[in-house]
Image: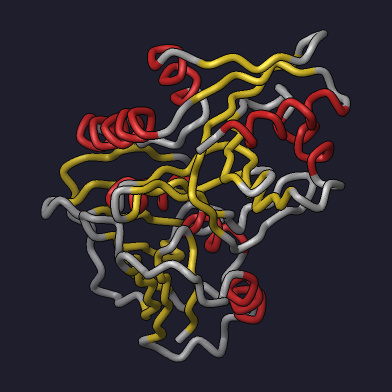
Length: 296
């Protein structure tokens, strides 16, 4: 059994078949090793990943095709669970099937004999924001496109769409020892025991920052580039609009959309939101430090 902690959740893998033929298993192990340390906060819930052999009598029963392409189908089954089917390159044979429970807490891979390697695509499909976004929403959490960490002792998240300064600000903050970034690509935010926390994630950006650490969340600081550096408080409506540009929510489903929006609204009721319009120099670092000093 392999185990990691991500976003405060325990993620465990169990093998129900011999997988010695999987040539990339060491890569899978390495990915888990990176986030395998115990976390100082108590765990709330677990995620299980299992592997078994795909039986010849496998059949698919579905009420709804959510999306498909040449090699993959994502389905909602007749019993309200989900399946992700992945086919060979020619599209003629099923390579593997991923069964997902209704709560997105159990991921069961069924591998065919042709599945001779667990490639990066398999890893990504479990751990990328598309599948785990459901898991964290169910645990009052969100995956967000953002940098974040402990800044001058305060937990701060800097959401931004691509090209608006997330990596630039991260590189400005990093040289200062009072700042510890957990990620510059994806951050997980969750409410635990009536308080919000942020976590780093395994998904690395250009700066290759991926620290399995957490901090109490004190502020959301949305980024934009400007000629002069300025921080301003955002009203709730503007903060929600900016948040929805960067958060991972399953928009294909009204049920999951409603769940995700409820988590967003809960977050913004509890955590203050700001906009940092900045030029790429030390004025941005100073402005962030002054904001951190003003936070409770």
